[in-house]
Length: 607
Image (cartoon, rainbow, N blue to C red; front, side, top):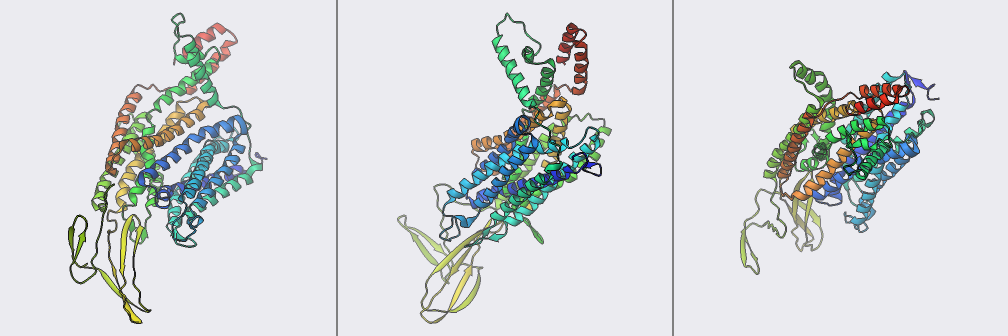
């Protein structure tokens, strides 16, 4: 059926896969866009703890792909893995939406949850399920799409992957624009709050649509049965080599050319040679997590930075979490510009801009982006009010009378003279009542800036009286404009283009044809480790100033950049296809002369 259902030369089934990926990416990035603000303003966590939980979640999302690949290749197959984990994913998104309903525990209708623990428990359950779902299907969906093509459809398969990644970017871009708008709406039964249930509910609905669309195409898919996971074979080969080398560690046993050669008693020369090629690339991955440690803070620290800035762009009011859209917008612009203009100009200048040099430049640019963020933070800090530190208190006295007032604090007997408040807006309300005496103050937070309204109600004993009110702005609105974040996003995006795109291209070009998945898992693992680094550095630094933390991360990346450049200098590029062709030829010769075969394979393994 899969072969008969074609549209413009493409298997009809891939359209279900592309729509599935668009909806899934919308769901994931839409939820993630508002996540750190949900932690801060709904769960009432501070900036540091919100950042820590955010990066823990992202790290988990990039650890679970290894589990998904193992399940798909060794047990269920790609189709059943995608369906099963998508159900888990959808449930997780639904739980997140429920966890953000303020009225769920607001039994006294005072506008705040009565049991924040319930919301936290639901939120953490939802995030764990989402991490398992999105990470588990990540290595399966694109590979499952590739399985739909025949061997003679190489051109169509290549175009499919371009369309597939376009769907990823379109889903992430749209969701990052839309969900912050949904969050900014007011909703609630007893009291109006920022509408996190809608911001999480729409991604949950899109994930349900993603699952339904994928299952509709079930009868059209070509479903390849599990063939065994190459990652398991590589790990077993490495484990046996280490164990065998330890067992023969005495000097009476002769040394071998490479430590992996100690696996030759059990594993083929082909697997050992291919594993050596993979390990060469994985060794270069060691410094890479530091780049992701900075890159993924766009969704945490940089978003929190935007909450202290002015988002007024004339007719449009930009939400802090919408600033994250600058990155995908610039990606769409920068990728073709770099490929069509920048790289050709560099080649014309006779500069040998190798893949590893490009990645080094990308790491350096990410460090510069954090220097730019630190400079913006210094300007923001000049406009922020000074709040009392731990162990301190702050008292503000407002004199709404006509004459000076003297206030005495006891037992210190400290006197303060308070002048009448000037420059306040006034108004009068007429009403009918008997004697009433009360006052009210209200504070609200909009776009990171606080204003406090003080009301004074004057009462009289007559049936008719006037209410006199005063409005006083305690903390001025944010004055540093969000547009000042654009340079740091631009520099970071330039770094991403030359680092991330080049890194994947380099990895695939240096790996054997049957071990691309191993390097994919290794690449995703660097992202997970990078987010773990954020937790470690932010927790251990104990820096009170945010600009100082930005500088610290930049300095760490600059140091790692130097280390990576040295590693890149000593790296020797190889052609895996050529080596595998030699192995194929030598395996043919093995049938004729086994002794010659052993010598030639040993020579190849030393390459």
